[in-house]
Length: 401
Image 1 (spheres, rainbow, N blue to C red):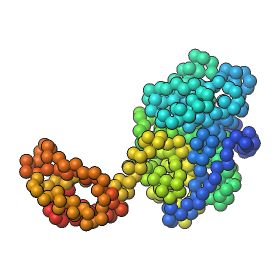
Image 2: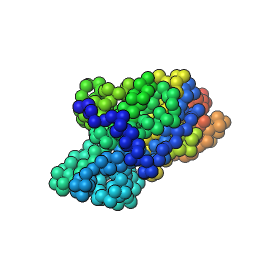
Image 3: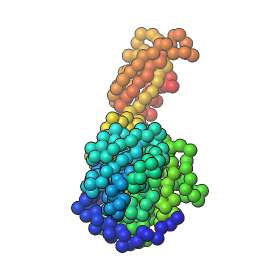
Image 4: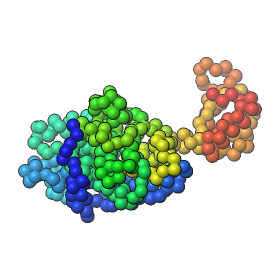
């Protein structure tokens, strides 16, 4: 169902309506993301409410008739669209009800409430919250503000693409996160109108590849389940409108793993002092791990949001450090006799690794009573250093499990 409502004029109208409401977010050049490409970062994590979602939500809200506005609005969201709708409704003086998955980060739930919206928490993921919102809309007569499958929402998100065209005029590749597809539909439409030679690729979490699957099978159908740290793009089924837009305007969709997402988040923190949520960091992960051909090209990675739950940020960082070989977890089997532990620790110290924690366990089934297991967490410089430490331990006759 390809829409004919979305036009260049609609994009320009969205820019005018959003002026003074949203920020023209900055673009930063990065020499750290991929040494073989000229990479720029479009920072929608610095947008009002912490993500791009305010753009589409506000433009859609501004398009409502007086009768629709009086009924109040309802929306469903994992968090970012929720905040966008809540703030847009607050600015327009419109009552708002937001259905959110129970798994949504508490920071996003509380931020949504802070903008004056009523929040309804729903068991499950985004799609379950969407079903609840539809049911309430029918029951109460609210005006439904879809997070992605709507021309006005897509046009609002398309202003990100308009800004990219202004800020990186000769961009050759743009990498965009995909959940339901509203952002990439708008960005790809805008870019292809003005620079059709620029490639636009979507990026999804490997645990939630709904748009990639839809493009492969030729229809927007629901996945059985999704699972990813990137809660903002944990969508089982894209919209029919965004699917059609991606078919026409997007050059391809790739996926990144959970480790790759975590490493991208860590890279942004360490090298740019910048916080991105999992959904926002997938574009950077795609560039870091060469998911598309960007060698020698000018590339823009859209960081769609920065609303990460600080309670899980340390776990994400630990995951990335392990993936990079900078935190090493290993279990060593050794004889349970005096001097063995001292020898083991001396070997590790000689390699230059730093021990974070150690656990000495004699009560392990299926090992001889004369042996024990020592679980070690150590800080290493990289994977090569980790491998060198393990090799040194094994060279002295210890068994690394």
